[in-house]
Length: 177
Image (cartoon, rainbow, N blue to C red; front, side):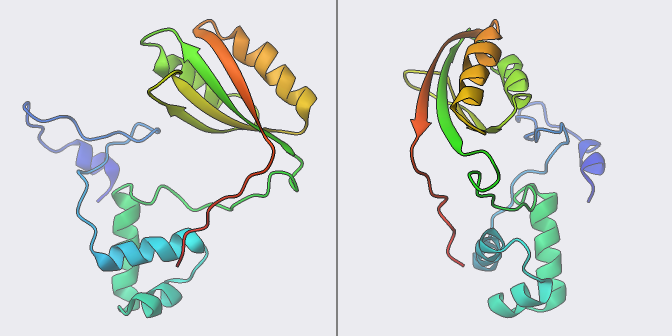
């Protein structure tokens, strides 16, 4: 069922509205995932290019069943997309840093939209603790990182302070298929 069709359904005033992905579409309520769904997710996390036939064989279901399950996982927003895992250093972005930000209270949505526009921004999270936002960036070099922090980030009026944590070495944890 398309996201637009799901938005037209009746809403109960006593329940929270369905979650909205970043593009504003309405998602259906989450359905429980069985062992086969979990196995499909593991396979696709390890190899997003795996064929339907390969997935079906590995989880011991028909191709039609695997296809239907993958489509449901996409429609339900469990699978948000398929992408390549990039070696940032080899791609010309050899400097990585986590930047913590303290922001003006109740400005998360505004700040998030501005952070999305930053070159090299890879991950943005609203967190609890000593700071409000954790931002992961990848830049070509330290000079570009300095420019990003001192010129772009600190120019955002809602950003009260930043702290930059330079990454010396990193490794993406690969899911086991």
